[in-house]
View 1 (cartoon, rainbow, N blue to C red):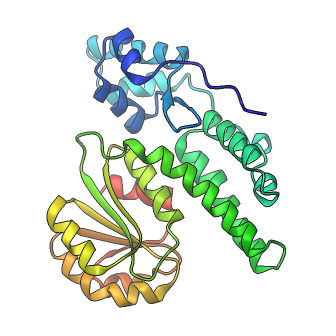
View 2: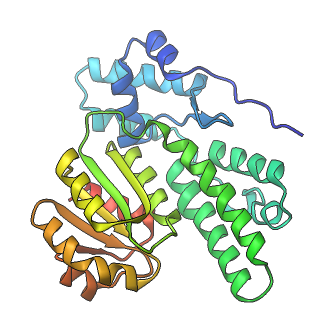
View 3: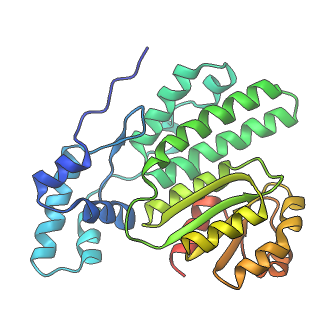
Length: 283
């Protein structure tokens, strides 16, 4: 069964109705979370009547002399809390059954009911961790693990289609050469973008010379390097040390340690990818 398409309007129509520029609306969403759009199956944001009402209230308060952060606190006070874990749709079950339609329907409900941060940190990453643990225990096959990872990764890449938009600082994200697991890095990129960053995403298995060349071309504020295994980071450490003399470098993932980060002239991201994005955004 195909899930119903979320009702609402795209950001251009919301901008016209409310009388606020699209970039301002995006900033209110990313920085303050006062807008909570749903996502279509293709990953596009769709804003409902509640979003329109909150945007109008933000505009009124700011025109009345309130600072944007103060207005956001006022508007956010009326927002509903995130749903408790017991209400989270089952995602692991359909993934284990190779049920694409069921998995996408579960993701639709999760993304529609939660903020992007909560959906990634509290549902998507734990489910994929459980998939990996299930494979390690022999309860899930390699094929099931690959199916789950590819389906979820594909869906998250659909959410990333707009992450080069905006006027915020730029971050380059990559996995070092030899590291092919980028789901955590992808989640970090999505969380950074929600906070106003523009993201240049190189993804898995990025050679050091390609990373250095990209840094030189796009002149980012930050480079985030993620790895599940330590060996690729050890091999990339000399290049990261050179890069760290030009821009801030942060390394994260299960393969990163504080000692390895220090050897590469980088900071160590020891928390989950979403929390790491929040930490990077307040430096």
